[in-house]
Every structure is written in structure tokens, then in C-alpha cells.
Length: 319
Ligand SMILES: C[S@@+](CC[C@H](N)C(=O)[O-])C[C@H]1O[C@@H](n2cnc3c(N)ncnc32)[C@H](O)[C@@H]1O
Image (cartoon, protein in one colour):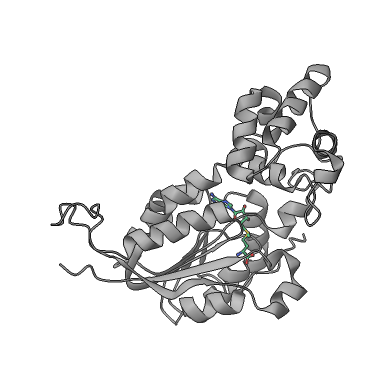
């Protein structure tokens, strides 16, 4: 079985999460297991890592890799990280909390290249699936064939920041009256025909933004992240590290705002002179701003190019 994925910013993840023997971690997005394995090795002999993925193929791949290995300290959970609190209760809950939690959002190379999954606009005959969980959840095919033009345009605009959202939505609705849209290639053709050739973006494929938007909508990616971050913070012990890699600005904005909010005492509007909310900072942002892959990594692994890493450490709230 071959599951392809080159871990992104692995050196930085290991440097800042700094796993040590006996510590406990959560990898919320197992993928090809790059981070999980690197952390698992460093926390032996008593530390454990709980690794979560929605994709059964990712879970099976790591299961296969760790069978007959020293990695008895990897606990696999086939689930959505939005349920992280419940997952911890079910599988592994160390006294005092976790030493580090990592999210590497988005999708793996294995998912992108899988002809049965429909994530790539380059695989023309692929069915329009796009669900991280495989066939179990909603599909992009359902969305493009059932939503109104206004709904579709809203998805393309909100999750893809697509300039021609409405034009493309109208073209989809027209086309599906003739024939149900079923493959990536059919959708790509509709997009290419809808966007005037001379206005098509030069640096990216004209279907990039619509495909990103559909993937985000299918998997409810932004909602999952919004709901997982506060749970992750609650699961960390003071001194525990939180690392999030995102690949588009919508996710990065959520992480940035959450880190900013949780690194401040008092969230009252400036017009209120004495704090009413009692909010206390629980995070200290490490490395103000974002970390990006090195030029060398971006060159060797083009899918790392858009990666943005944000890091924070949990602190004791001070009253
Ligand atoms: C970029 S890959 C992770 C790669 C991994 N860091 C490595 O080194 O191999 C992202 C993974 O997150 C998974 N994923 C995305 N959203 C998820 C969610 N809400 N819950 C659980 N897994 C999710 C995807 O299925 C995919 O396998």
C-alpha cells in the first residue's frame, strides 16, 4: 500500500513542539503520518501520541506502517478533529493534559492524487467527491447539482474569493438542466467556458478557487477549525504548545484571530473603561506573525508554498 505525502515544515514543527521522552501529544491531522512518526519516536518510551484523521486510508496506512514496529505509543482515531474533546475521552486522556497539539490543515498528496476522490481539477474523469471522509459524507456532486445559483455563488465567493462566482454559478445551473454534473472534468469545462478567456487568471488554473470553495463547503472546514481550537486549548497543560499550519487565508484568519483573542486579558470593547468580561489570556504567541517554509523546501515540495505556521504556548491565566 502506498500513501504519498511529504510532511510540510517538519523541522519547524519538531523544533517548536519540542517533543521529549514521556510527553503526550495530539496530531489532529495524521495524513501520511509524517509528524506523528517524528513525534512518536522522540517521546518514547512512555509518552503517547493520539493521531486523528477523517480519512480511513490515512488511518489504515499508519496502522500498516506501525504494525510490528516499536511505535506502540501511537493511538489512532478515525474521526473528525471537531470532536477532539470526545476523542480524548474515548481513547487517551493523560493526567494534567497534553504537552503539544498540532493541526496541519487541508489535504494530503495521496488524497489529491486519488482518482476516486475528485479533489483535483487535473483528473478529468474523477467523480466530484471531495469529502475527506470518503463516500460517507456529502459530496461536491450533491452541492453543484442541488444548490440554487445564489447559494453556489455565495460558496464560491465566500470560500474561494472567486471574482466570477455568479457567472460560474449560473453556468452550472444551466448545464445541470441538460445533464447532471458528475466529474471534475465536466465542472472544469463549465468554469473555463464561463470565465472570459482574457480575464482568466494567469498564475493559477481558472478552476482552482471553485475547487477550493467546494472542498471547504463539503468538509465544513472552517466550522471544524473554529470548533476545534478552543477544545485544543482546553486540552493543553500550561507550557503545552499549539501549532497550526494552514494553506489558505480563510483558515489562517481564524487561527490568527483566535490566537490574538486568547493571548489578551479582557475582551471588552474599548468604550468600557473597567473590564466586565473577566477574560484572561491563556496563550502566548511564539514568533509574532507567521512562519513560512524555507525557499529550499518550497522548491523541493511545491505544495508547501502556501503553508503558514502559527505557534503559541499555553500559559497560566494570571488574575
Ligand atoms: C495535510 S494532511 C496532513 C499531513 C500530515 N501532517 C503528514 O505529515 O503526513 C491533512 C490531513 O487532515 C485530514 N483532515 C482534514 N480535515 C480533518 C478533520 N476535520 N478531522 C480529521 N482529519 C482531517 C485529511 O484527511 C488529511 O489526511
